[in-house]
Image 1: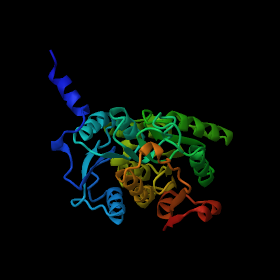
Image 2 (image 1 turned 90 degrees about the vertical axis):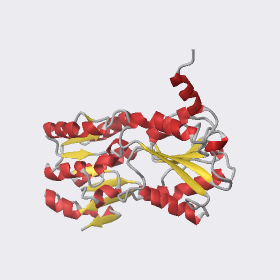
Image 3 (image 1 turned 135 degrees about the horizontal axis):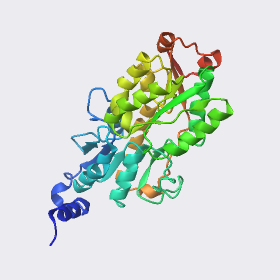
Length: 329
């Protein structure tokens, strides 16, 4: 006897039927993210992607329609969400992180996947190489050798008196363990201690993780860019926590500094969303994702918030200020 669950699983993975296909001349694109509703007023990334598509001749409602799925900070939802996209008959899936990319790749080996940003796609077994991915995923990777080391190096340079550094992180995030080990090696060489990770794997665990950070009595904190924290971090309680605890923190998104975070070092993610439409366009025109090279960032930015620094009693060294791409006064 075939169970109802088996039938639903089969339907989710079966080729899309005619009723789920986009109208003639209209492309149906899936969206999978770990954050919140991409159409929310506070979210800037999705509109950037739409504008990039518009410049290439694709307008939502005319020749493009989107199936949006987002996890609201709960990565465990990804498998179900991507199954919904497959059953909806999307021609292509846009993913916004490593966990999303892994979930999409596990669900389908035929639907093209465009990663706006992903960890090391080779380590994650999503591609054979960056130059020739070989599978159904292409896009952009944030994984650049030495980046985590640079993150903690800049924090230590900006705060030379900091000797105990906390990390707020999600151990389930791909590459997180490797990144932490690299940061720890750099810190030890500079006489700095990296404290045990304050872990959170779901949004409801963030408050407890922040309490553990306080218990460790750190001099500074690093907040990696994780899907889990997206719904909590942008102007949310993590930045507020750092302000209330008088705890200097290093982030990886410029938006965190704009929202009141002390400093950040990373890629301007908005530029990635502006470039993603090029990959989408190539695939919709018939290119195979496995033959489109995966791109690495060529430029990282350093952003500082002097207003927050004054509130925390932090004085950035001149070497940090002169290297900053943007200083918010």
